[in-house]
Length: 117
Image 1 (tube, rainbow, N blue to C red):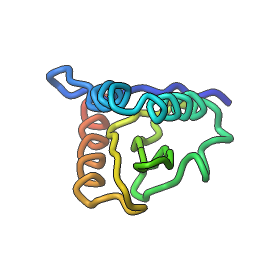
Image 2 (cartoon, rainbow, N blue to C red):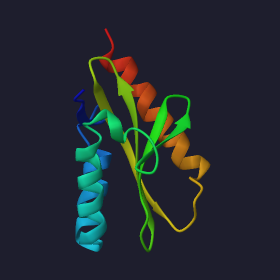
Image 3 (cartoon, rainbow, N blue to C red):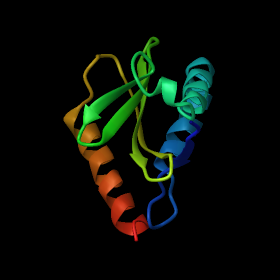
Image 4 (cartoon, rainbow, N blue to C red):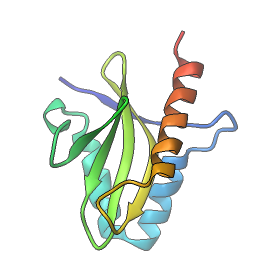
């Protein structure tokens, strides 16, 4: 069962996850490679669970990579076996800050309103 992974874009054409990945590539190439490999694995249904992925509730999931800093990409499912990545973060702790969850939720709602017929 193959899925496609897409990146959320704002109405002005910005792509927050791509920008996050570009910054990550420059600052930590090893974590960048791990996240890129994780995004590729999400195309396969068997990786939609821990330890690579975890549900955050309300339709959001996280792709997780543990390193010096925990690196996460937040995403959601859409019809036709599609995944949309909406937000990338790095932090020292295990918990995801409420403002990051809010950002991801807002982007998910924005995508759903603009892209769902």
